[in-house]
Length: 273
Ligand SMILES: [Zn+2]
Image (cartoon, rainbow, N blue to C red; front, side, top):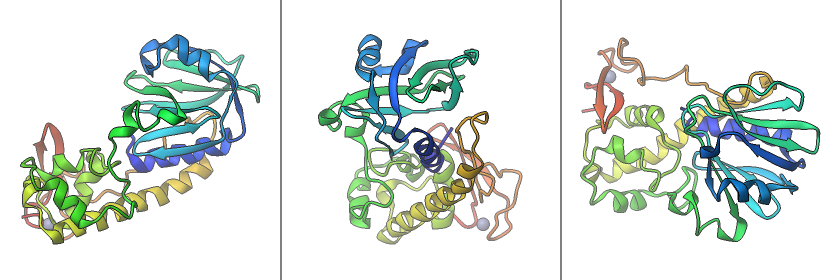
């Protein structure tokens, strides 16, 4: 599943190709990708909208159009491809945007979990998923005081609470493990027991881990080509996540795998007491 750094990379890749181009019209092949409004209105309203910019909020891609924001969440497998009109439409291509450059932007999604929302700009904080999102990792309002206040009544494991997009956006299952390892916090520790020092570390390492991954994504952008599709996965250099056959890079003990809130969770019992 793409996490925040991958979505940031996809956003930058799309921006290079899309900024200043107009969406002539959209063809929706699989209706369930369109979450808001209904398919008919989506197709009607998006006609002749210019793509002025590409943005990101949490794991949502935002197409900044003339009158609307088009939000796109890739979920498990969503990808964008640039194609031409004559190119054969493939099985998992669900939404096709015709651009004024004679290219097509195609949304492909083998799992069909992705969602798109087309929302009037003035309603972006009233309708749809953005209104419920917490702070970006680099928001200056993200302080230890903010976190402790959010955590104080939560008895769930900190691992689960880090995934709560209503507090900090953009931390997915993989990077949550990496952040907790660097903070030396046991993923099962209750959020309400998080100390001020823990909270400061969570903020520090969230910025570091996600920032580093975004930086690595920068190299992916340069090698991007239309046939590869834009997905930008670069999770090879992980410390603990997925390493249950491996050793802790700090102390050499075995990395253990458990489940927290149903999600596969990796940590070092020795370093994360
Ligand atoms: Zn260790």
